[in-house]
Image 1 (cartoon, one colour):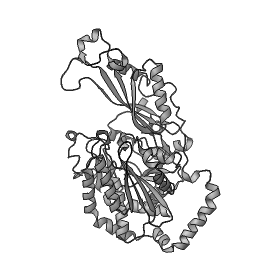
Image 2 (cartoon, helix red, strand yellow; image 1 turned 90 degrees about the vertical axis):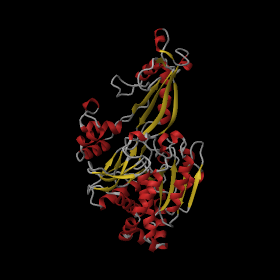
Image 3 (cartoon, helix red, strand yellow; image 1 turned 45 degrees about the horizontal axis):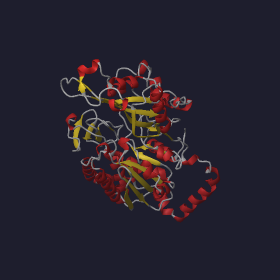
Image 4 (cartoon, one colour; image 1 turned 135 degrees about the vertical axis):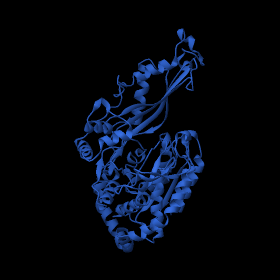
Length: 510
């Protein structure tokens, strides 16, 4: 279901006059702060960004060198403590680590005495990595030359999300060190479980003191490297939700097949849990694997004319061939033309197999009949679909089709998000881009996922989205990178991205 941002809640009209009077009172009481928020000394701020460049790069390297990996329970307390340290250093007066039933989060506030307050969502965790697959050490933060891009930093978390988050924190340093007035108050919530589906984020955000602080915000945004050399900058109006789970077939639960791995010659008279899993998986999607066939699965609403027009406008200015090359694909599903492929990307839910694990997978052969097989699954959801409904439908479907013994082990996930284009956090991003001479695009929905639902769904019903200049790539993959010095004049390097967050904060204040 569509969730309206705070600016469109039912009491908006009744409170409009009161809000206007309150803002007027703030302007009268704090004229110097209001003028400073509208007209900062950008040159002084940029000078501080330049002066602090080397120190900032080292701070990012230090952060990358401490990988907090929730799936491996690796450095989670240390990651939260490091996040808290960074927040204090950037000027947050109140910083505390909050425990959950899983990994800890960080809650911080910065009171600048400003009329407006902005919410921030950070993640301090990163994905797993295999160092053997990288051309540079994943925890070193090494800077290398890529002729087509410029100087880039290689490291796990470089672009997802430590790089953009560090750039935002550097914006706070620069405003303060330049002697400028911080234009907005800030409320930060940082979690350590985003990469496993944010299973305990409700325990952070709905804690009374955190919820009360967020209720005062104009919305919640996440720093994001949104530039690309192949397409104009675009701002997303939402993101897909996700269900992360495992489907586990075993001889133990099935009551057939072996309860331990046995010799494969016995397949002639013993059932195989691996084949049972494969047959069950085949019932979830159409023959080509591209349409969901789960019984009574939540129906995705049709794409709106407004969103279809957004896609058409964006596609006219984007590079289909460049994207195919970057992804290493030659065809879209059903050989769809560019417009229809992008419409499908935005509007369609998916069932994806992330990995299949069963029996022996090492070098050579090992003739076994495994007692268990596991499919790692993610199911993307679009606005109008709900996490709980999708999980319930999957379990019911398996039972109805005779696969009730297959274990559905949900590890995380959440609802999709959607935010109105006229919300303050979206308009501020458009303002910054237009003031730079850009002609930005609005994009209906990020095909990936982040737990913005916890802000956009009731009880908060806030706007939530992303903003930030700069570029990077390889998120979740080997050789993840962040652009430090860009050779493309249309793409900002590290310091330019920091300045974009400065401009964004002042745009929010206006």
